[in-house]
Length: 187
Ligand code: NI
Image (cartoon, rainbow, N blue to C red):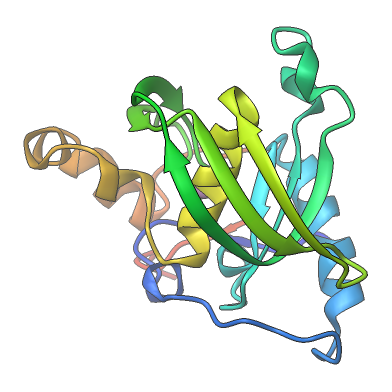
């Protein structure tokens, strides 16, 4: 089932999400619905808070980037209770998008290498190092489970310049091409 993706301005997106265990009700169905929702929106990542669940869960399928980044071929993973334990290297800029911000892209600075602990969909624990574009996508989704958004990582000046655009996103004055829920939309 395709779930509505929450647009910027929804308070759930700003909350720090909580860890879950394997008994979390409806978890398997939620993960299935998140895959369907993400593919329908042509995203490479989706975090549970973006579909209204403030839990530490996100999914990534980076295959659309595999042409330019061969290491991302078959990079399809579920991340539960993820914890970044180290971030190293010299920050680099990349023009990011986010399903909660249709029609907006921003240059975001992030470090190139991370070490992360997480559990997969079977609650098997992993500790892995990710670099480059894989790290970049993970860092973006990881921010979501900490209640941090793209616009929190740009300068105050830049944020002022796009204020009108952000208001339009919250009001639903955008054409995402996928199902969304807008916090300020008049009905
Ligand atoms: Ni996002």
